[in-house]
Image (cartoon, rainbow, N blue to C red; front, side, top):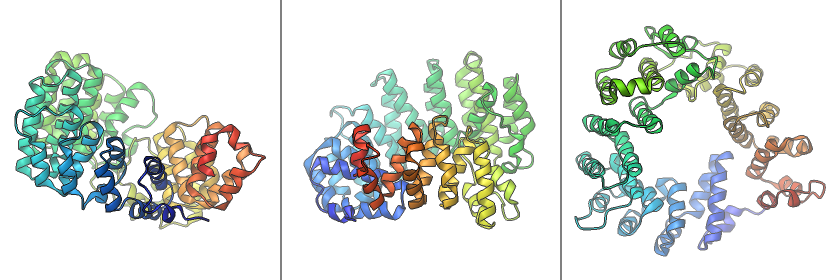
Length: 467
């Protein structure tokens, strides 16, 4: 079969070919990492990227900066810096962190243009803000202060102001907590609506704890959208975590005094001060108006503060290991440790328990995690269950996880999808075609050209991908 990676090398000077190459590169993660890396080396070398920089095709450059890993531009920092001042929009947004990573002094000069120059658009300012942690600390703090001052001086409209300050909050929590607290006060000063409040509380949770999974769990419990509770998650938390109260106060009435007492008891001082700043900025009226959201945020913060930094899985039995993997959390801590533990058991036993548990947990975040774990293990025994998981009744997250897992399993998954094609529902065909195309090989061409399937008339775009 023709090796498209080698065939396209050195030929990506046309926008149509480059768009095709980027799409191929995007699809590659569903296969092997080696394939993706080979594409990056062959197609996006320094010479090719320099030619596109010289072309000043800003739409294509924005796609390159957004899709490729930053290391592809490692030798092009000077060239990027020479052009960044003329860029705006998505291109400036995606290129700013790359410039800061590989040419921080030049980035500093670009980001602090002399007074009198036209102000940057919001996308460029957001890109500069994202790049601040990559600058020397003193320079980064100076730039952060200047961006915050400009945003608060109403040099942006309300949407732009909140977007810029939200990014400043994320960066401030990393490099300057007092500045982050002033940003929180600014965001809450005018009385945020629900969407703005959610963005800010989510930003605080991510900045302090790198995740909002327990905030999401509290919300799901309050809305009656999950059967998961905190107490069955005890293995993930330190022994003194107040899991019974977190369950009780997620399910029923709770006061601000109840929750701030937990914040005082379980959250370290630096993090606690940020949370108390948010509560003070909201004020009593703001907390009352958005109480469910505030309560979920505080419950999630206490839970996150009590989460174990490490999880000892050395003596954990198979059933418990899988039970933790299957919990209904939007993201799972210690996944690598749990996956390593699975590798110590008999594969047939692991496969049987995972298949049984996936069938039971299809409607939960746990099902998504299990499908992802099946892909990490890459065993052919998972193929029937994964195909069944991506169906009309499944959510997008599960379908995507099952699709990616099948693509990693590779040829056995491809061959079974082709064999079962006439029996698959519409969703299975949509996701299945992605798997078939990602795996590739001679059977794919034969499948595409099989007159019995009539793929060309049913879905010309997908047929072209296969052919």
